[in-house]
Image 1 (cartoon, rainbow, N blue to C red):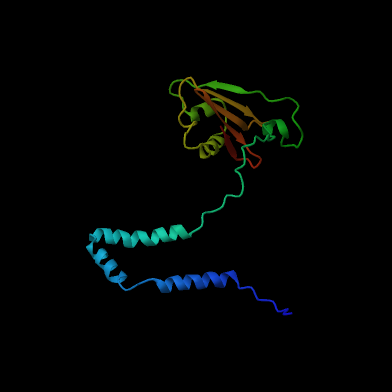
Image 2: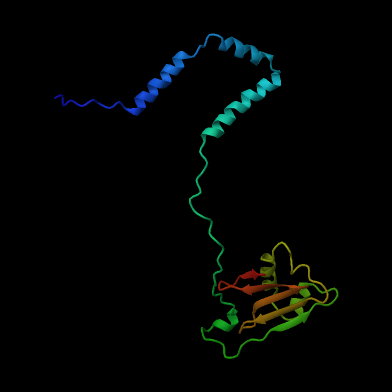
Length: 187
């Protein structure tokens, strides 16, 4: 009894041998002259475009597309606690909470008023005005005040400007003093 086992041939070798046999059976004798004749028969612009587009198409065909493994996340609403209390209501300069809440002062812009005139008339610091204008923004709500607009403001305990609100038609722009003394803007 013969117990020898026959080795199985590898599938890769069979495929490789099959490809080699097929390539060997092709008659390559007339291909270059016929292809060269057809190439020369084409207009020069067509040949140029084929020279450019052929490598591009091959590269695009070989480059794998990125796989999108995750679904895009749905927009979720997140609540954020924002401290909307002005500095004048938080802690005073003597590090004690103020006794009474400060009230809003209101000014209605008259014909020919400038913001500097409004600040002077209401005894507000022109240095604060300069600081506000530096954070005004491209829409310039402070520089372009008009007759009938309402300007509201709150003062700190030591009578410095804390919050300034400019109402412009249906919009309101608010400027507020930050902890470092500079101003920020909120639409």
